Image (cartoon, one colour):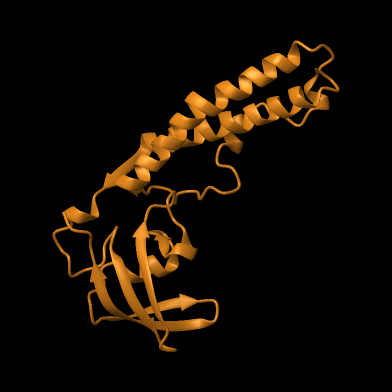
Length: 185
């Protein structure tokens, strides 16, 4: 079928990131914890060894049924294959540039660096507990924030007892660092 009638671009690389992916700032490294790296590798292996072969089998079966233009299994299967392939390309690229950091080996345990869990208090007195992780493993609702997030950037290099300034859309906020925790080696 002519590309004029389908929504496919010649350059699939521009869509590799997908809507859920966070672009890394130019010139920065893709820091990631060992657990995060293993999760990405496991997802890639699952897509490659389980999900993609299963969808290929369905598409092959649907293609053998005849007219492909009105075959829902075939059309959905082809779309799903493109999504799987896009995610696999994204994961492969991210894993290639990943720099695994083990926070348990951090020598300066009194200072906030990548992988630290930080307990801090804002000026309203509300206490927060966050762990600074890589962009591909951040889950803010579970307290896992990306090292490039504004809060993490403000906390980096702070020590227990420090008061740091955080610029927010509402203005300047002050955060009091209560505790810095690293996992045991």
